[in-house]
Structure formats: C-alpha cells, structure tokens
Length: 166
Image (tube, rainbow, N blue to C red; front, top):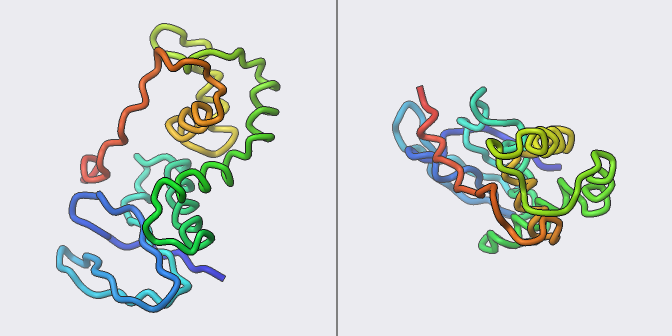
C-alpha cells in the first residue's frame, strides 16, 4: 500500500529518502526553490537524482528498502537498524550463502580490483545477480562474517549525489 515518488530532496544530495507513518509536510526543491510536499502516510519520497543513469539500480533498491524498513520498524530515527533490515531483506543470509557456494567463493577478505581482478569479477557479478551495489554486498558479507578479517578492498563512503549532477 505504499507509493514511491521522486523529488529533489536537498541541494547537496545528502538526503536520499523520506517517509513518515502519518501526514507531515516536508520541504522539497522545485526549480531550485523550497516548497512543501505533504506526505500522506503512504508515500515514500526518494531523491530524484537516484534515477540518474550514473546511479546503480542496486543503490536505488537499497535506498527504497531502507525507507520501507523504517516503516516496518515503525521508527524514523534508527538509521543503522533500517540499513541492517534493508540488507537482510535484499540479501537474506541463506540466499547469499547459497549464491557464494554456486560461484565457488572462498572465504577471505573482499577482493581488490587491481590485485585480484578474477575474484573481483566474481564479487561484482554476485552483486549484480543479487541486484545490489558492490558496497552493499561487501558490507553485508562483512556483517555476516563471510570475509574473515577485512583486508584489501576498502569500503569507502559513497560520493554525494550532487557530484554526479549535470
């Protein structure tokens, strides 16, 4: 029963999604000016720049699932909890482990694209198969203890969406 709409949520791309279980007004940008958008308790607003061809569909899916997780948790402020639930819904442990076995993944640190290009391709292919970003897959694998000690591949913060603007 939820509806998803895309709007410009911030000038710098720092707000990727907004939802609320009840009616509330939130500021959005239209033609560079702040206007009020009234959430009706059934709408999830996502940053319109997530529709850019430079943003992976996996990033879009994770952001949407993060906002849905807020609704399932009935919590607006627990960002870490919403991230963990979104990851668990998009990459259930049983399915992730099954897919790792199918691609003969050996345990160990996440691969470095330059140092282990073959293993990196397997990792990137698994992320694509599961419909998530490589970053989300790496974090989920680390949370589940599927990488051993972290070494090599670095989980860096995602650049602000504003950097991908026209």
